[in-house]
Length: 363
Image 1 (cartoon, one colour):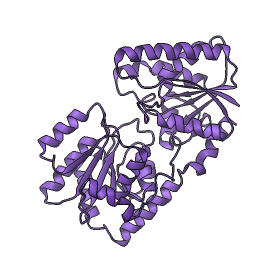
Image 2 (cartoon, rainbow, N blue to C red):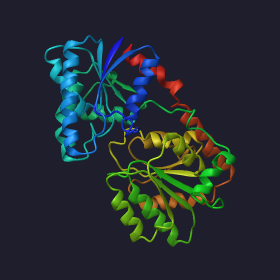
Image 3 (spheres, rainbow, N blue to C red):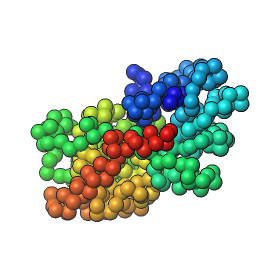
């Protein structure tokens, strides 16, 4: 089967993690014997370059769709990527498979809201729709009134367990030394984009509550984003600059070690468009339980007392309460059960265990 992949998000040498899940999923299809051709767009660093990239992306995609032979079109990130596909479809129709991710369905700004008309149109013309989780399947069905039989769940390429796995203390000693972690107190870590509704402010407020109560811990926040300035200001205002370790973007191999050295991964998202939250599942694969908002996709796979704990969304006091509870179980049989539950949950997302689901969608 020859697929033409259309996506406005795809990694390149300068931005290796931008749209990495698209590259991963297409790589899995190629390994399974699919012949993939690409009409993709990489990240641009300035407005003019971005406009020109979109023009080139749309033009070349339309030309390929009109004058090349493909069995089907595979669209990633429905809103922006659908425009050239819809245009070409007026003249030459091919089966369309559309992969939804988050903000293409749940807009987070005015521009994304304006693009909703294209999302609706491409979904109405799609043979099958792929989403990352059961939560998002239900959300998409309700929002667009789509029959559930048309929607398939595939968790964004899953987990590479050759990268995300448990490590020995010796293997983590370099991380402990580099970040001067104190081994006699817990390590709470958050990782992801520092952007709208990711909940970084909830985490920082919870840290302030713990500090005011005289409780000590190692706190790590990994990531960058357009709200990074606001994050740094909040940290300064609360007097937490010496309490929180800030780390920018890391390779997956480095991030796995950060997960593994942590006692708990904190996932305080309040994004309605949090369609999966792969970072939380990656941390579980490293044997690290998750403290997550009882909201969106994490509500489905984080189970209290089994692989972590949940707290009321956007409630720093509730998060702090769960973090305080963790002090009493570190090193106990209860903590071991949380670790084992985390590992079992993550296994369900290992690439080799899920790839057949993606292949069956196209079959």
